[in-house]
Image 1 (cartoon, one colour):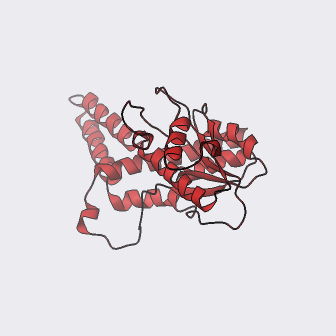
Image 2 (tube, one colour):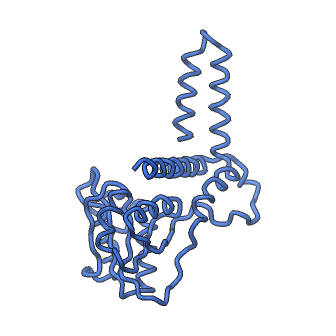
Image 3 (cartoon, one colour):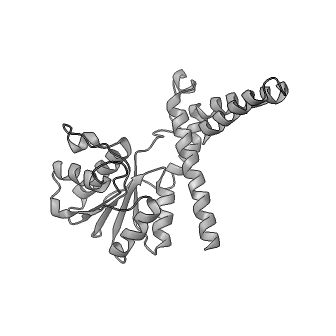
Length: 240
């Protein structure tokens, strides 16, 4: 990840300081360059757009849809907030997209997924609670409470949706890797990406667009993570 590389370079710069000032300066310089490049929107957006543009947003199909699969993300359970407020942005984006598609295809059942991590409630259950709050009948939502990552989600959900018309909902940057895991199980769901970071790659930009920002650094980090995940996925497929 860019920020991890920056930290390692800064630590190296401190270690070399006084012993090898030239090496220390180079480490510091590289750290600044990586930090700057990673936080620039023109670079970060192009990097992320490569991932997000692989699949179009979902539009209503004429064929019957059997399942809408919602991959898990994060949430924080509380005593006084509704489930919709307890979802992290990624889970909220996926839940809203699943609801949108369900309104297009009310014949479908929704499969929510994701374990509890350090929480007392699984992410699958929390997303289900939010969907039910927003009008989806409880019996139309199926929970998969135990998958800990995308690969496990694909392994556990694929047998249920085999030979059916299923839609896969996850963040646009995560979609290429998620589809890869489902395809490896012999399941080929229709992608429904959501939560796009890059909204209008070729539109007009104001001067503020070119100022480094922490948000774009975070975006670069996520794009880097997903790209590395795709490489790991390819290597696993290669040697299996």
